[in-house]
Length: 421
Ligand SMILES: NC(=O)c1ccc[n+]([C@@H]2O[C@H](COP(=O)([O-])OP(=O)(O)OC[C@H]3O[C@@H](n4cnc5c(N)ncnc54)[C@H](OP(=O)(O)O)[C@@H]3O)[C@@H](O)[C@H]2O)c1
Image (cartoon, rainbow, N blue to C red; front, side, top):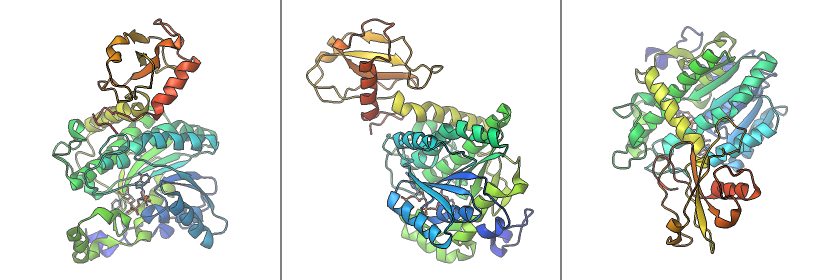
């Protein structure tokens, strides 16, 4: 607290008063390509600006493309040679995350640094497009899925360039203020016990647990990538849009604890670029110095549990837990397929089980089918009776199957969290 208020530097030589430009002074990032989520405003914008100033190729991922293009123009105004690109990403939609990752990979760019910065705070209870509590969905699950989708690209880049990759998760001191059990695995979506503050704390705790677990996994694998988490400090940004007047007024009473935006971006930029952090992974940083996180955040079992929970839910929301509308004027077989985990992308294994179409015939046409929520690796969808696939070993890559899979991907989604989007 004393250091925060006085700005006195810590072991790193930097402190709460250091700015993003100061902590990256003299560092040349010409060889680096980095991606920052939520880089169109607040701390993310300043981070993007300063990293571009250090010659990195910066890709800003944002849900609001107008704001992202404005941010790009603003940076270019003062830095004409900045290498900047913007790409659309809505972290509250797993479909958007997948499309974003596909688009990014199609650009064939390297990826040295991933900064999971975007976030929402204290939202009133609401569900994401996929039917997941909004703060958990945006702050944690979207970033978890995005990181997984980009991990091979980062590993390839680290291998081919010999430059250590870095992943940075923006968390918050608010991770200390979470639900009693840390992460409410069985009540993620529960509205009755929802607290906008604790749900934010829970999602920020998840950011640290994610970083720590990924760090351990990458280390065990021998991948040349570090993963750390960062609390940027208290900074007035759009993040406070859902805050009550009481919280906004508290700022005036606690003004000595607040930082400005250039100071707020310092810890992220320090952890992203500073050479002294080579090989440092699984740590939590505040004011450009390593700090002790909460006991929940250091709990390895909790981190593993969160990993399994997120892994089971994020990628399969689109591919596996699906409700489709009954198409018009045909009779349908109900098809239950299982994802081929070992197979190539978009292939489905051959143990498709056909069930009687009679059970469905009484269902009202054009109404959503109330399928039960299924296990993580199974897909439920409808297929026309005349699709020609009538035995358990039918080839699943036929034209009709891919048509139905496309249709399923566009359908409304029911998630393991039990809500229909
Ligand atoms: N400011 C603080 O005091 C503070 C303290 C501790 C931690 N943090 C953390 O720092 C990070 C940056 O926050 P900030 O203060 O810079 O807030 P901010 O100015 O509101 O920036 C957050 C960014 O995330 C984007 N975003 C929100 N939902 C998104 C979604 N579904 N998909 C894609 N992008 C989305 C926002 O885009 P839109 O403009 O379209 O909404 C915005 O660009 C957050 O992770 C936050 O939790 C901030």
